Length: 121
Image 1 (cartoon, rainbow, N blue to C red):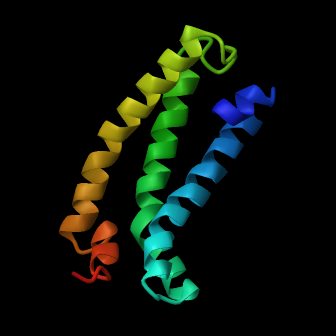
Image 2 (image 1 turned 90 degrees about the horizontal axis):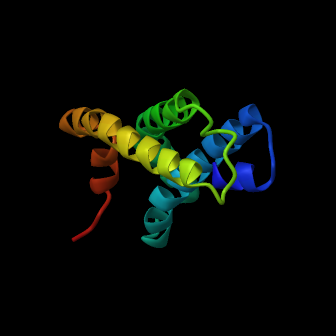
Image 3 (image 1 turned 60 degrees about the horizontal axis):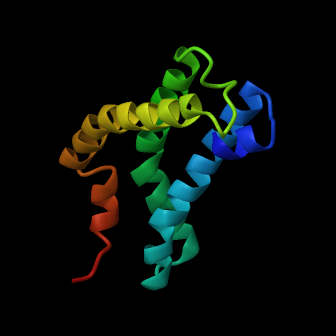
């Protein structure tokens, strides 16, 4: 949201950029330690996709949905408390919404349980 707003992109372009960056950085943060531990990049990619896709998708749907529902939030400039307050609220609501998704995945051996299976203690 911050990058799209700073660049003056349209609301659909800002949302698209936010979603793309969320997936890129989400997968990268999961893959980095796996690759650093010696896991081949292709395997780390498969693990990250399995671990993070549902969680990131849920986070982005809720986060962007909340931003769209708050009047004026998507059109507010970066200097506006409306922008930052809306973004903070949207991220907090999305985190709460994503928690049960992650918990459900981990309880079934999916999600980040797949990543943890590759940690060596």
